[in-house]
Length: 140
Image (cartoon, rainbow, N blue to C red; front, side, top):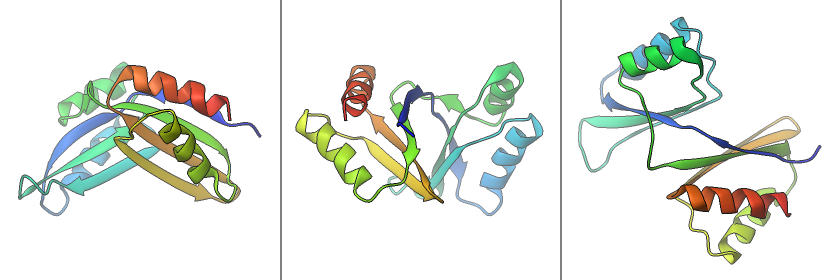
């Protein structure tokens, strides 16, 4: 299986650092029929008492409307690339090394392997960097 590489939109929302706050946002999306593939939530160390959640994908008018109603916005400053393929030893190192050798600085990376497959989400600061990353990874 070859790598499947695509640009993705990431949505983000602020969270109050209270029990159940993340669940309420995710439940609102689920009730609108949104099928999330990626969720990452964390506290905001620079803003005590708050956090942030990132999700993808949100598609369709109903999903977008539900997301906006609970505080999600499509990020304009985070440009993400999704890479899916077979899980192989060293795959992440090979991808990040190739990106680094071409001068790309990563804003963030999240990866997981399930069974024989892996999915990696890499964030960049600019759309141009995301486009360059896609070309680099396709060339591997």
